[in-house]
Length: 290
Length: 161
Ligand SMILES: Cc1cc2nc3c(=O)[nH]c(=O)nc-3n(C[C@H](O)[C@H](O)[C@H](O)COP(=O)(O)OP(=O)(O)OC[C@H]3O[C@@H](n4cnc5c(N)ncnc54)[C@H](O)[C@@H]3O)c2cc1C
Ligand code: FES
Ligand code: FES
Image (cartoon, rainbow over all chains, first blue to last red):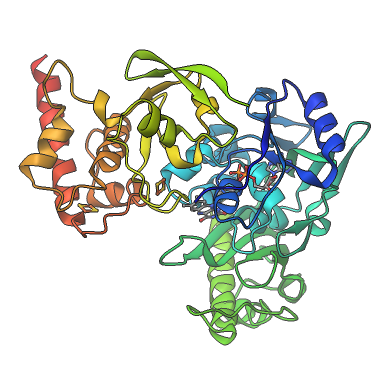
């Protein structure tokens, strides 16, 4: 329970944080809410020589809307997202996902940026941000870029962030009319993380058929992913139970499915299919309600 | 590289020194002798270390002491006022909502935050809000009963005053 020794830095602004990160190369790590990194350091699964605490960068804590998009600062906590009235109206998938993360204490401290940067294979945010086709802003000392969610998650605990980049914001489109969303999660009974988590957003056309569906899945493979085969199978289809079931059968297609003491790969793939169908049903129900 | 800082704990300013790895939990227990806040797992699993920061429950084992500067911290030692137990404490006693008592300080602080935002929670709302606080002795049904009792006590005293 005692981490390896390290030095602690608390930069006053983003510029200073990026400069420190560049200066320490691979030996520095950003500290946000500390709810993944601190346990890893105590268990000595991580041993950075320098910790760069973003705690003073309060300007990275915001939720705002502009030009049909919602932008969220990296240091916004899960609880702030869960309780945002702007998001409940404009992008309700996000508060619905936040509610499922950990417990009250975790949601009060953990940040969306930290969760995405950490890319735990059973974390909730990656599924939602993938389903919304979100983008993630990365900045280093000299430049800034937006990375599409579909390119952001690279592998187990690995993202497209460069070693000198700070994740600064997330942006997603405002939910369009005639759309519906859902996040459904089966909690691991001990850790509370996702055994399977499925985020779905569907868009209906004028004939009330499925114009498009997007599905993000977490907990199933080494990283969260878009279930593209499910999405393809639904395009233009009537939202019948049969069509949903046939599409959801592709939920874990091509994925190297996790297997552990609690759930075999076979059981997890089955769960992925069932949760995908249920998430789509719920999203469609909501889209019809509009 | 030790740094001196001041924290606002239970309404008093207390000086502590922090090393890079000093958690709020270790500052409370090892420097200030406020041992009511419990070290359960040290890695974020049990919530025995819960304190209130500006009114909201946090795990002190995962919170660096420096992060707590400028915030109002309440630990279990600050819950009773003028020698009188808080209704939540009284209700835990009356319902005997513990066996070993190790989880109790964290339970009480989380319950305080719950009742502040929701003065009359249902069983489900209690279970949901308290889900991170683990009781190895399994006294959950009594804890739920104690929170209902505290809620009644607090509502009736709010009516009187
Ligand atoms: C008891 C418990 C239960 C939990 N349950 C769940 C759950 O059910 N679902 C879930 O999704 N999560 C869960 N979590 C994890 C929690 O959501 C974390 O808060 C989150 O994964 C990490 O966010 P953080 O702000 O704490 O990041 P930190 O722990 O501070 O950082 C995590 C990693 O990201 C990097 N990082 C952080 N911020 C940035 C940034 N802005 N730019 C670049 N790199 C950055 C850090 O260097 C580190 O490598 C749980 C945690 C605990 C302790
Ligand atoms: S001691 Fe902090 S969560 Fe267990
Ligand atoms: S009473 Fe023993 S841990 Fe709860």
